[in-house]
Image 1: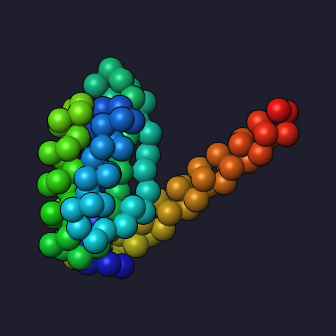
Image 2: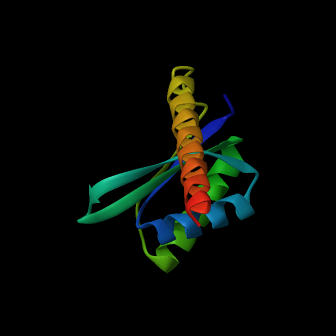
Length: 116
């Protein structure tokens, strides 16, 4: 486990992309996962999870929240410095979920290209 886990929950994908872009540019952090949340504030929410050193994650989340609020609405954010070892299990689920989503998207692209 790296030193901190951070998350930014936004209303809409565009807001999440802006937040993630700003987060990754602001500090040395890694995206470990994202989740779509249906029914958040009568819309679709996106939660992004990042890891890195404590100070980097704090800076990244602050930058991401600021950028996200310029584009749309940030619902919540949090930084967990030095999380408990059990959090590794959750981060592994984030990584598996993200990898499965990537593989599904690649398969869909292949199927579309074959039809064309």
